Image (cartoon, rainbow, N blue to C red; front, side, top):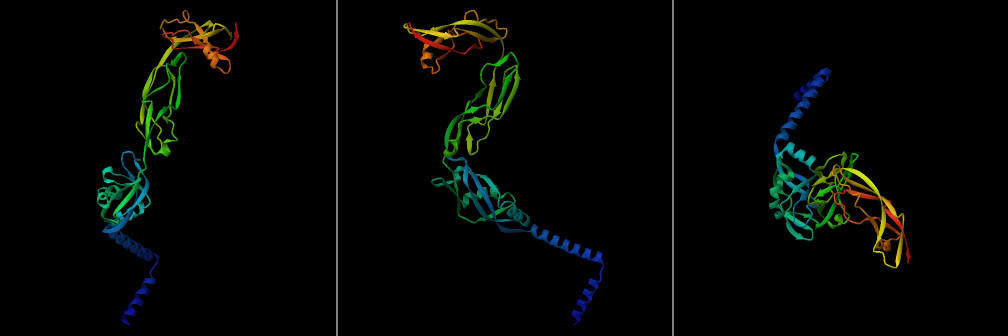
Length: 327
C-alpha cells in the first residue's frame, strides 16, 4: 500500500509540472536513447551481409566481364555502424571485382567457379575494408564468361576539317593505326563495321596538324588501341588553267569516236612558289575501253602522263559524251 501511495504522489507531482518541464523531460529521454543507440552501434558484432558481385577477369578467349551477377553472402564482424551501413548501401549495389584467372576453375560451357578459400583473398574487394569476413555462406560461386572473338575494323573520322583560301589538305586525315582490333562476343561484333573517333574540328587550317584522338567506346567490346594518332598535311597552292583538245586511246581501226565536247578546261593546283608550270606539257584523252564499260555512254577525262609536282587537277567537264560509229 505504501508503494502505491508513493507512486500516486509522484504521478501527481509530474502532471502538475509546467510546459518547460515536459520539454526537458522529453529532451532527456531522447538524449538517453541517443547515447544508448550510439553505444550499442559502436560495439562490435557479427551479422550476415550480402553483396551483388560482377566478375572481371582476363581469361584468354573470353569476355572480360561476367554475363551474370552473383549474390555473395558472408557472416561479417564489425561495429554496428559498419554492419548497418553495409546492409543498407551494399545489398542492392552491383560491385565489380577483378579476379585472377588462375583462381577461376573452368566448369564447362561458359561457367567458371571460385571456391570459398580462394574467395577469401577478395573479401576486402567485395565487402570493403571495414568488415572482416568470418565465414562465407557457400562453398563456391559460379560466373559465366562468354566466348570472345576478334574483328578488325577501320577507324572512321568524325568531325570537320577545312583550310583557309589558297590552302588545301594534300590527302585525307591519316590515322596510326588506321584499323582497330575489337574483342567481344560474336553477337556484339557482327553489328560493328567501324570505330568512330571522338569529334574533331579543325577549321581554317594553314599548316600541318598532328596529335592523338580518343575513340568512341563500344559497349561490350574491348579495343586493341584506344587513342590513335592523326596527322594532316596542309599545303599552300596556286591555281592555273588551260583548255586542251581530247584524243582517244585504244580505239579499234574500224571505229570512230566523236566526243561532245572535244576539248575541256583543266585547272591545276601546284605548290605555292614551287615554280612548276604543268600547262605547257600536259595532254588529255578518253579511253575507248571506258566507253565499252559505260552504261551512260560517257567517258572520264584522263591525263596522258604523270605530272610531277602537281597537287591535283580537275577537268571541266569531268565526263564527256561519246558517240561511236563505223569507218
